[in-house]
Each structure stands twice: as C-alpha cells, then as structure tokens.
Amino acid sequence: MFGRSALDTTQAPGIPPDDVPDGLDRAAFAAGCFWGVEEFLRAVPGVVDAISGYEGGAVEAPTYEAVCSGRTGHAEAVLVTYDPDRVSYETLLAEFFRHHDPTTPNRQGPDVGTQYRSAIFTRTDEQAESARRALRDFQERFKRPIVTEVTPAATFWPAEAYHQRYTERSGRGGCHVANW
Image (cartoon, rainbow, N blue to C red; front, side, top):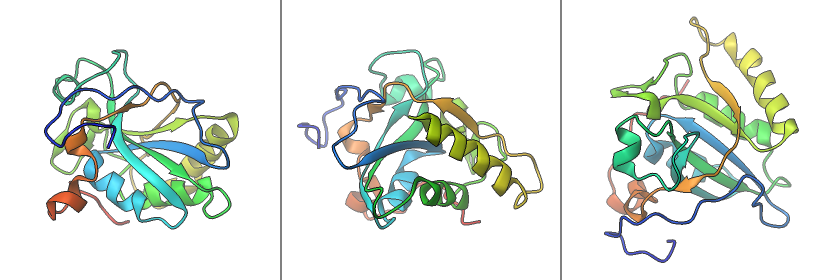
C-alpha cells in the first residue's frame, strides 16, 4: 500500500479534505487505536477503503513515534472512502458510536493519550450537522457526557505501511474496541 514495503516507515503524502474520488465520499473518525477502528469500519457494507493514519494536529507528515509523543496534536484516525449509494454517513456515525466509548477523554481501554481521543473530522457542512445531531442522539445511551470532538477535517496523513490492515495481516486482534 502507498508503494512502500511493510518495513518502510516513510510517510505517504497527505490527503486533503477535498480529495474525494468521483462517485464516492469520505469520512474520518478517531476512536482510540486505529487498528481496531480500521477493522470494524472496513467491514461495513458500502465502505470501499479504510486507511489508518493521523489527523487533527499541527505537524506535517507526522510519524507514529511523533504522534505517540503527544507533541503533534494528531489523533490516530481512520479515513473511510465509501459509496454513499450503499451506505450513509449516518450509518458510519452509528458504527463509530457503537464501537468505542465516547465518554472517556483521551482514552480507549488501556490506551491513554491525546492521540486516542474520540473525534469526528467533518469534510462538509452536512457532515458536521449530522455529527452534531448524532452526538445528541447517542448521548441517551451513555451515563456520562460524550466528549467526542466534532472538528473540520484537515490533511489526513496515512500511517506507515506496517499499520495498514494490521489485524488482517497479523491475524491478531486489534486494539480495544467496545461494542455498545
């Protein structure tokens, strides 16, 4: 993927928010460690691709090590390319809320740090409106307040090749992913 070997740690070019393939749409979510998030989103019918990476920070071409340091401001995120004729953005939002705890700031299970925050990176005004509505609608399922950020998308930086499709390639389970 991205023309690199599995051991290559160089950064792939960033994907700007307006880079959307014809006939498809994109969405980006952060819900803890990206391995498990990529896995459950990739399984949603209508999802064409899901890429692990970094979004929401101030550094260009961040590396995994830099993001884990907490100094870049990025979250581990997943960029989803989907067919809107087969799956709605609202369905993707429902999957996002179903598979993680949006009430824990900067944490999912044992993973702690700002890179593990819950966030929805919106690419259009319509996505932002749907995301804010989902926050209100899903709040009734949780006893604590939802802390998920809804923020305009910035450049998405694909993670190093060894992170892509990690659970599929390794045969090991992904990171902590809840089912609510």
